[in-house]
Image 1 (cartoon, protein in one colour):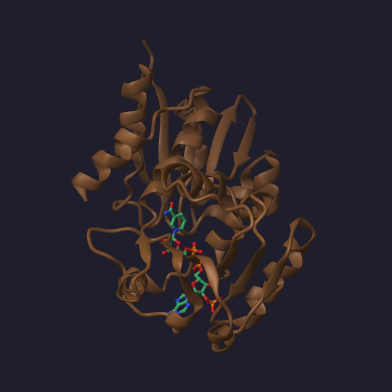
Image 2 (tube, rainbow, N blue to C red):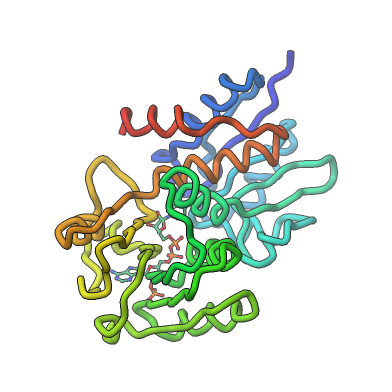
Length: 272
Ligand code: NDP
């Protein structure tokens, strides 16, 4: 039988766990697929995809820094991809290229289903206003929080995002300096500060006893944001569950099947 071919395309891409995740999904659902990492030169995203399609590929995941380019590359887009102006999943349908964004649904599923933390009526603080933030605001607001406040190093980037999404719910912008005056039930770190091991200038006063601190980043050890939250006595988790959940949704886009995510999250945690 001919394997359906998929890949994760990025630069860099060697760190990506997507091959491990999708191979596990395929085994569990008895799908025959081949999944590889594909490094695209920064100025050759389109050529890399064209070549992969010409080789008969069925789809791909897109990671940093190409999610905007993938958005432009797709010929049809899901509503959530249009909203995010970013694409992390492409499916090749003959001449058509369907683009989707599964990051937001991945985050919401991890928080609500895996961590059993309903978002409805919660006060959310979203730290960061980059690509990841853009992908998760819509799905978060659709879970009907009491409020979603965005705080970001560059204030204007947060204002831009809040303006774009204001029709979807109660969204506002706060300056990092004023966070001390506010309290939140869910604090999501969607900045890349943890990548440089830097601590965000947020006060412990914005946590309450039941606050969940969620860092989109993941790794072998706790991020500085997680360490800060734990030191304040707050539950803190990383974004590994989101990574697996967004992959599961991409797998559904390609194969029409929802794989069980719990065993894959467990396996990845063991292998970190
Ligand atoms: P972007 O580069 O698009 O955005 C980075 C954001 O972080 C901006 O808001 C930027 O602020 C802010 N920032 C960067 N450095 C600092 C710092 N030292 N202090 C404070 N703020 C800072 O990145 P992405 O949005 O694509 O990714 C953000 C994080 O999310 C990454 O760690 C990434 O690995 C993770 N991620 C995890 C996923 C998962 O499945 N778990 C999926 C997608 C992303 P400014 O506007 O001022 O530049």
